Length: 108
Image 1 (tube, rainbow, N blue to C red):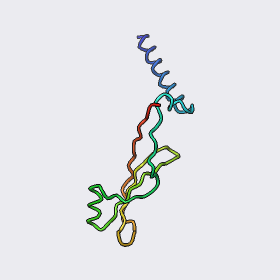
Image 2 (cartoon, one colour):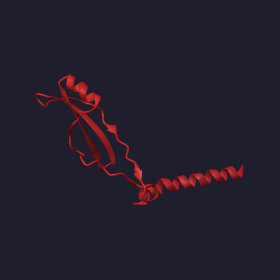
Image 3 (cartoon, rainbow, N blue to C red):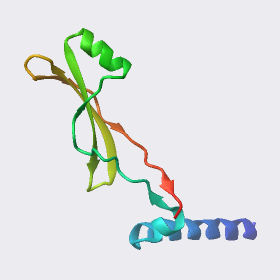
């Protein structure tokens, strides 16, 4: 029973080390796990989507589907934003919820 307790305390110690060291020491996460892949070139710029199925459905309604990647610097999240605009007036008709984009870690 004592050995089980000892193993649990050891695992808990490793967990606390990883939790605090990875979050508080700059560069440790990149060194141990790799760097995040680069952001897309057109971050923050709206572009018309013409190739997807949702775009064809929007065109049938007389709308233009526009997408952009947006990077929240405070949290480090990359999201995909989608909006639909009227073709004639440019008025935004509706907006889809943001979708988080997972960035892979690359070994250096």
